[in-house]
Structures are given as C-alpha cells and as structure tokens.
Length: 371
Image (cartoon, rainbow, N blue to C red; front, side, top):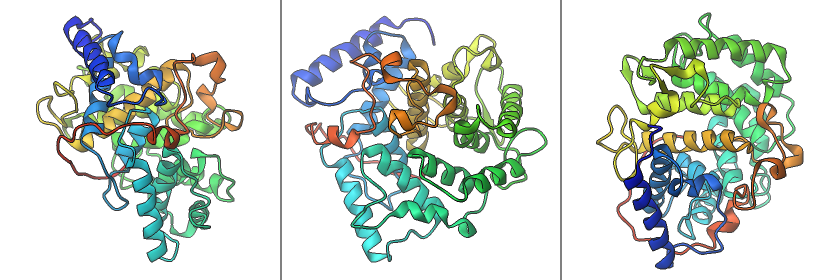
C-alpha cells in the first residue's frame, strides 16, 4: 500500500482540477490538508480523498433519525466540500425533534452522539432554541453499558463541558475492562470494535491519569496480540474494515502511529495498510471485501483515517473540538502554529464552510447505521 500508484494519483489530481474548474467547489471553502493530500502522496491518501468524494456525492441531505451521524462527523472534520444545506438541514431536524420531544433525547447515548456531531459541524449544543442538550449528559442514572459510557465521555470532551460525573464514567469503563485488556460490547465478550472506541474515549486521560494509562496500555497490548498476519483485525471470526478502522481510530486518538508503530505492523503490513485493502476502486469501503461498497464500513473507515491524518499532522484529535487553548486531548495536543501550515486549516468551524460550497451532481442516496 505504501508504493506510489502514479496512475491513481494523476487521475485524482486531474479530478481536483476538473471539479474546481467546473465551479463545484468554492475557492473559499475551508480545507484540512488531509483532505487534499491525495494528489501528492501514496495510495492510502488517494483512497481517503476518493472516499470523501463518494460520501459527499451520496449524501445531500441528512436528518436526525437517519442514523447517519457518522457521515457528518467524517465529512465535517475533514472539511470535505458538501452541499450548502447539509449541515444546516441536520441542525434544523434536531431543532424539530427537540421541539416535539420536550427538549430531550430518548437516551443519553443518542444525546452524546448529537452533541459531538453538532460541535463537529459548527453548531452550539448548549443553545438550541434556548435548550442546552449537553446537560442531558449529566443524567448518570440513565447511562449504561460500555458504549454508553464511551459515547457520553466523547460527548462531554468534544468541547470539554463541565461535569460532575466525568470521573464516574471513566471508572465505569475501567471496571468493565476484561482480564485480557479488551472491552466487550456486552461487558463479557472480548470485542475489538468496542475496545477501539473505548480507547478513543479514554484518550484525553491517557497522559494524566495513571490508572487510565495502565488500562490503555493493557488494551494496546491486547490489540497488538490479536492483529492478523495480514495486518487486519477480525470480529467474531471475520476480518473486516469496520473492526480494523476502530483500531486505527483508537490508536490515532491516543497519538499512536497506526502505520509505523512496530506493534501494529504484521508481515510488513500496518493497520493503516490493512484498512486500505478494503477500499473499493473509485471510492468507498467494503466490509469483508474490496468490491462491494458498505456504507457503514465506508464512513467508519473514513473518519478513522481522518483521525490518523490528524495524528500524523499533530492536529487535535477527531473528537476534540475545543478551542486550542482549552484542549484536553492529552497525548497529541499541540499548537496549531507548530503543527499546521496555513494550507492545513483546522475544521472546528465547519458550519461556516458549508455555506460556501456549491452543489455537486447527485449519484444516489445511501443509508445506514450509527456513529
């Protein structure tokens, strides 16, 4: 995967020029360097860029309840050009839902996802028609399960909201860690996907909490041990992109290079290389293959790669949307001046850019699942 694929690179470079020439992308759009890197680097970069295009082309409107928060997270944090109404339309759908549901979400976990995504697309979750949905993250009695605690922590830390229950949520996750070092979706069965997401949620505490540090190190050792000889990761007997993506995400959020760290290179193939092996030609990812696009696999792989590129560039974590001076991202928080050129702009104010892009041709809408 690291070898240069000149043909793909040239095609991608021409594609960028053609899109700009046709006026499909505003010259004023805010770009992250990771978005436009494809024209100059190797094949994983081309995969990343083409997948962003696929997601943008195939998602013109997203409403709350569609289960497509992962699309919004990936596209906004990459600052990939999208239709002008994509983010504002989602925000308006959240407003409508809250107005009809007493200003509350049905679960704290759902609220945490929306808080995180609204921050990513540039809207304030603390003032939605005078409703502060971040306060629902304090409803500790209604948070349960490993994923629930992980998502709630991610929501809280997306803008470092004050909380009386942050330590409780951390302790619940630590208590749920299995003897192997893994976490399980049901609290009992080792699950690599869950382990990757928990690592992402604990990333802000890795460098300043000794207990978290030890737990995370044990999980890292577990993930290294279970990596397949072709660099991929398996879920319940099937190696697949989603599981591999969750490992790349968890490692990248911790500031670990999933492409070069020796613990995650097997047979000369890194976790990032392995993720790229599921990429479908022309954009998108398959689940257990590289020929049939699976939307869930596509957007998870895309935001995992965005997290990886952020780690590479010394940028704030995927889930860290705090102003630079308030960042609590721990392992890889650096100043923008030190890490990012004037071309590599941060994307926290993505809502501003979404009003500056023109519509691209629609190629067919897709569906699917959760963040």
